[in-house]
Image 1 (cartoon, helix red, strand yellow):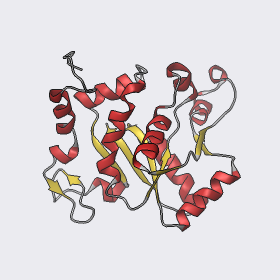
Image 2 (cartoon, rainbow, N blue to C red; image 1 turned 60 degrees about the vertical axis):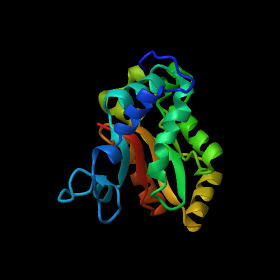
Image 3 (cartoon, rainbow, N blue to C red; image 1 turned 120 degrees about the vertical axis):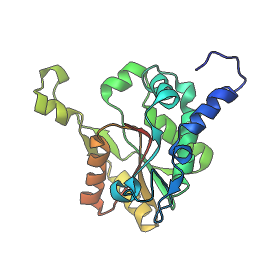
Image 4 (cartoon, rainbow, N blue to C red; image 1 turned 180 degrees about the horizontal axis):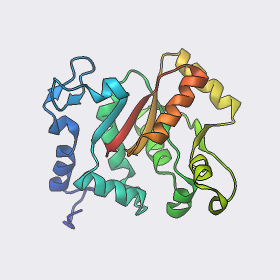
Length: 214
C-alpha cells in the first residue's frame, strides 16, 4: 500500500489504517438490540432493518485492498481480507458460510472466484462450515442478449445438486445461521436475490456479511 518494506502483508501503519476503516472504530454507539456499531443510537440500526453486516465503508485503504484482490488478481491478499470477516461472524450463532459466486467474466479475468477463496480459507483455518449453494445463470452468449436478458444472465440460481440442497436443509435443522458472504454491497441486488431464493425455497432468513458497503 505505502511501498514500505514489511515482513507482514501490511506494515504496522497500513494495518492501523485498516483497523480505523472499520465501523467498529468509526462508530462509538452500539445498537441495543444486536450490539453492532451504529452512527447514533437514535438512528435505525442497519443490521436490524436490512440484515446486513459490513466491516466498513468502501473507502481509502479498505477499498484499495479489495480492488487489488478482486480486479488486480492479488490472491495473496485473501488471508488478510478473510480476517476482516472474523469480528462480524463472531456475532452470529453457528454461521454457515454461503459464498456469492463471481461472474463468469470475472473468473476468466482473474483466474479464481474471490469469494470461494476467502470462504475456503475461513473454513480451513477457522473451522467454519461452508457450502457452495449458488451458481450464476447460464444462458445465451452475453453479447447477443438484450438489456433485460443481460440482467438475467448475471442473476443467481440455486445449485442443481440435490446433495447440496439436502446438506443445506440439514445444516438448518442443526441450528446453523445461513450467512451470505460477499465482498462489496453496492446496490445489494445479488445478495438480496440469494436471500430471497433461500427464503422461498427453504423458508430461512439469511444474514448478509460483506467487507464494505457503498
